[in-house]
Length: 369
Image 1 (cartoon, helix red, strand yellow):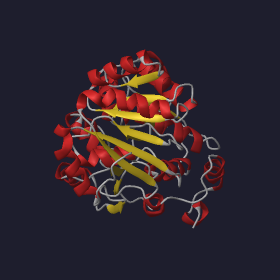
Image 2 (cartoon, one colour):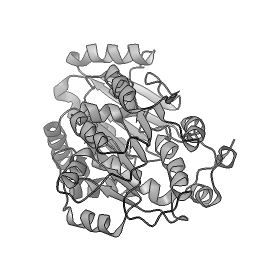
Image 3 (cartoon, one colour):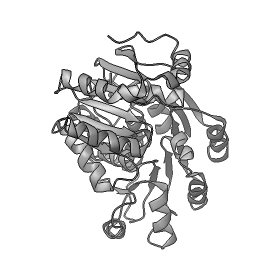
Image 4 (tube, one colour):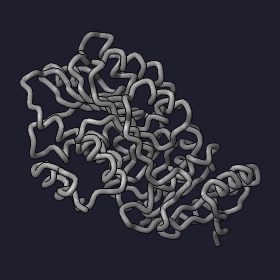
C-alpha cells in the first residue's frame, strides 16, 4: 500500500515523495482514510510513528478541496511546545508546496508583531501553543469563527503542562460544526474525558502501545553512583566524538550544569529547556541537526518536537520518574528503519525507577560494558 492507494491527491502526493516517503506508516494507513471521510479521530501513537503526517496530509487535502477567498483561518493545530509547533509547521510547509495553502506558527517567547501581521494578510492553518494563542485571542487579533478543523497533538503533554483551562477556553470559541482530531502518546483517563467532551463518534486508532520500544534500538544500562556519572559520560562521548548524542536530564538546572561541565572537559555541547529563549533553543537545535555540534542536552518537555531522522544515540543521564517517559525518550533514535543505541545511567537511588521501566517494556536491560 502506498499513499496513492489511500486517496492522496497528486500535488500532495508529489510533495510527500519529494520528502522521501513512499509508504505510509501504520498510523497513517489507519488515520488518513477516516479523516478524509470527515470522521473525528482519536489516535494513540508514540513518538516516531508518523502521526504528524497522519493528520497534516489529509487536513491539507480537505482544505485544498474547499478553496476560499476569506482571510480567516480554517484549521487550528494545538501543540504543547514551541519545538513541536515548529516541527509541525515545517511538515505542513513541505506537504503543501504544490497547493495554495499557507500556515502560521504561533508561540510565545518572540515578538507577536510578525504573527499579527501574518494573520491580517490571511492564513489557512494556525499551528499554535495554547498560551500565545490565548494572548492573541484576548487582544482581539484573531477570530476562530471559521475554524472547521481542530487538531490536538500530544494531548497528554498539554494536560501535563497545565494547558487544560486554556484548551477548554479555546474550544468554546470554535464553531460546534467542525472535525476534531486528538492524538496522544498515552491515553490516561484525563485524555479519555476530554475526548468524550469534544469528539463525536470518533474513529479510535491504537498504534505502537507505549510499552513497546523499537526492535532496532540496542538498550543497555550502566550501574554507577551519581557523583561518577559525569566522568562516565565524558568517557562515553569521547569514545566516538562524531556520534550525535541526545542526553536527557530531569531538571533545567541539572542540564545547565552538565553542559558547562562537559564544555570544561573539551566537549562542545548545547542545551535546551523551558528557561531558554526561543532563539537560543532554535539555534541549539539547528546546530545539533546540522552536525555542527554532536551533543545536545535536553529536558523532557523541551525535547518534544526534536525529530532527527538518523539520530544514532540517546543517553538517559537521569532515569525518568515516569516509566512511559523512558519509551518516549529512546524513541528519538532507531527511526525509519535505522538502528539506534539507548544507554541509561542508573545510580543506587534510581534502581526502583529502573525496575519500573523494565516491567513496562517487558525485559531486563543488559548491563553495559
